[in-house]
Image (cartoon, rainbow, N blue to C red; front, side, top):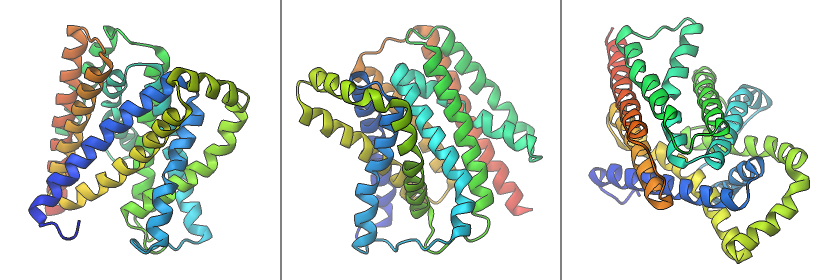
Length: 314
């Protein structure tokens, strides 16, 4: 990508980001329909990241991070919330429509703002007001969502809370150096490895007895073990890569606002693509609520970015 002119980097990264995200959501849902063990699937997806991380480090494409015991202690709470957040997302995606999960996940800024306020960092009123359409839109959409299930709703809400806490702990931990060669991409790689290590015994304990019979059923569902395992692998690799490309996209744009808007539009693109692929039906009220929530997220992102610029100027 270094050979590309700067003007092309951002569009290519954003296209990759969106495409990988769509691919992950579709493959994950297909696999979960055949193999409904969310803890196991979340663990496999975290582990699949190692297939990308380790060659990148070992072949010297990126410097390997150097960590100490204190580094792991500082990263432990971030890894914990990362693990819970991803697992709850997989639970939500497996229990309901992909589009519904992303509607509810649009409410993540609400959790971030509330937690920040509890910790004494109150956002400006202009930012807080933008949360009204976010929360209202999610509520309106949920009331008439045809694929509504409490498991999907609870999973998405749990994911929102976990990722909001992950963001707050990340800012605290990364305010001081945490090891060497710990840029955003390597940070995500280390968190992925820590999360995989933590989830492996958990999924074996809770779902171990169901793994083999569920695997046989999944093979029957797909009609081929190779096809099923290939899509499991794609889901895992796409999950890791879309997160890594998100960091590249952030570094390729001049303004965080552009990235924030792109992130909002990404959710819309994923919802539309998954709804078309799976032929999910949405009521008019659900679509209206979705539009209100996404519009609120867009306003929240722009207001937050503007507030941060004002603070820097002061």
